[in-house]
Length: 232
Length: 260
Image (tube, rainbow over all chains, first blue to last red; front, side, top):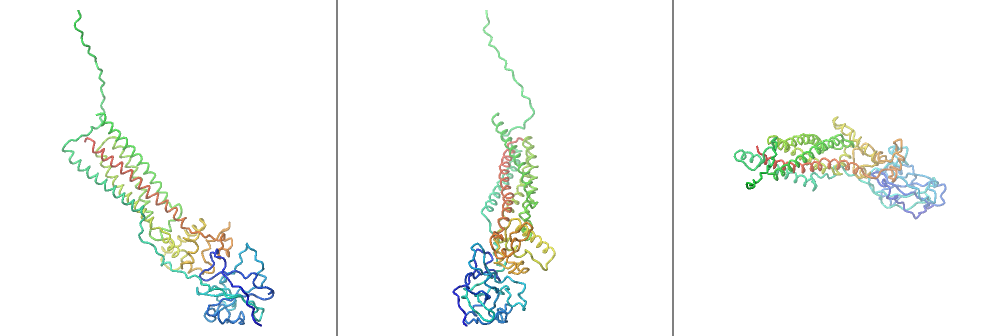
């Protein structure tokens, strides 16, 4: 029988998540309240390169080499992983919970050919598209739409970071200028002093004496009376 | 006359006061520079890694300049009170030499503070944090100390990277060579830790759920102490030098008024 197409597009989770897209993983919203009346089927996630989307064959079963993670993307253009029953996607979704699927989180089985359904890290940042596919053991039952293309991060080399060689702030320039000017004035003053000293020994100038330990004598002003004219 | 005598006495008083202030500031400068050199925030390995230690050179010079200022201030006070020309000439010349050294210290500290931009620390962190592998032993020990400094920085200040955890995603790094992207989108020290020192939720941390990882960068925690250091060495030194300039000019004038 034909596969039912459900009108749901898988989306990335909330952009609040810091690790929404990394170099080898990405985070999808869980398909809550999407598949109805499918109690025994398993919901699989299909990850494919965009070229495989057009003529995608839903009937290739998961676990076969054509849908094995370890063969992706060289030998096969798509793989299936993250299988679970609807019990893990209960509806309705509690609003406080973070319900996400992290694609690429299983590193232990990435090279283990006996685990073709491994949720391994994506091998390169290239563009991918995903959809959910419901299987009932031997054939596909329902599918969602394909997601928009998802591109992962490409990291740059640290040598590309520009480290400006000489950026002098205004403060540093002001400090250098002012200090240099002050120092020049002081040197000029020292020079003037030495010249002054040289010429000073030849001629005197107004200067004060070294304070000596002198005692100031106090004068008793002695009134001299005008002798009145000789009294008679 | 009485008036010019008074004027000279006032000048003497001012010069003594000026030298007292210089002496006190010299001691303060020495104490402050010893504090900075003792590396209280543990950030020295970050500077050591790039041969950009001159901000510490400024502090080292400051220690000795501070002592010199104190000693010369005492000499200056004696010279002013005794009005001894030779003593004051020695004082002025030695003060000028100290002035030159302190100028070098201030300018060095200010210039090298300018070169400590976020990108500077970012590049160094990406190239050296958790770097392993071959290299000569001094490089390896430098890498270890830098790694330890960053680990302490991230744990104590609850921060991650220089600008944020995205630093580890935007650039390849020595860390990335050692740890794959899926298990370690950023170092585990960026996760919120419980009392035992392990992440509260490793999955939450890897997903980047706020509350389970530290989303802010560490640059503020680095630049805060560096700025305080630069202000302390460069601008306090500048203030001392401006005051010293006035005192030295006054001393030169006073010297010219002494009758030999």
